[in-house]
Image 1 (cartoon, helix red, strand yellow):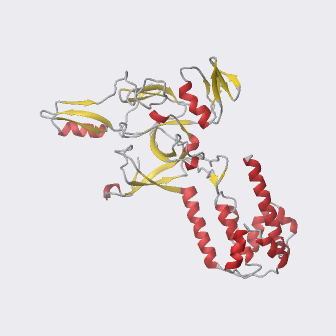
Image 2 (cartoon, rainbow, N blue to C red):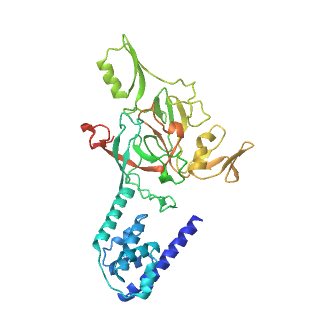
Image 3 (cartoon, helix red, strand yellow):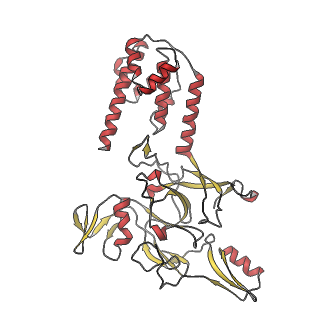
Length: 407
């Protein structure tokens, strides 16, 4: 239904375009048929209006095309009448259809208004940068300490993992589309993404923004034992994650969060009786853990397999809660269980073919992070970009972190 509505909108705009511009083509010695040829008609129109040819590219970039449409309409209206507020207002109210009246009833002339064009073009340029090149991201919580601090502003590149074309455009939801990536996602990459469990927003790009570290890639097997992370059976040495330790000195004891580097420095400088990691026992189930049927917690988690595109998942009662959201919420299928038989899209089956790549995300501050241990896998289509720089901190000036690279 959505596709039909989009096609209908395109046809209406094409009709308005032809009826509102064909006289321009004829007046410049062009065949009227050119006004009907997609892509080529825009290139010729831009030549007629004496604008740079590369403007024609902007006319087909999502969201940007809306502002280019306004810009071209203002140029076209100047070919027929003086660009007064009244004429511009009528043009806006009629969504450009006023051009049809002008094309049929007015003679062609030319008038320039560079000030208004410059303003609109500045808006177009700023939108291109914001929507397609980079994003400024604010750190609201302590889930990434010690790597990132509350109040940090980050420069996030949208190029690295492929530019995601805006899904919601002018209140219309378009299909997901991403341009080719310049870099693959690797273990330990810090990633900004739309929070998968924000189901208040139906569109992916309108969900809340989160930032975590990618610990598990598609196809990985992951397990956490007593706070130690194992990927595909191998212990992963981590320098960034922060764990809670109980510090015992002669006269007092206290708790402190430390990463591996902090722990070594602390041991070298302090006279201690003991230094013990605070771990939740593997026999204790933590509230709100993912999936809901497992007796897991933040320090003893898994084993869990991270699906990749093309995987054939064999479903059973032991793993269905792990992959239920993947099948229903992220890949938009219906799922039922009747008499020990799985029914997907009204068909009985015991297996499912995965359509997307998924990732497992953890915060560096493992004791205080709402991450994949609590909401599950991150679909690739939710990924926004890679943070590259710490710009500054809102609450405190830290010169050593000012415009520093993120590791």
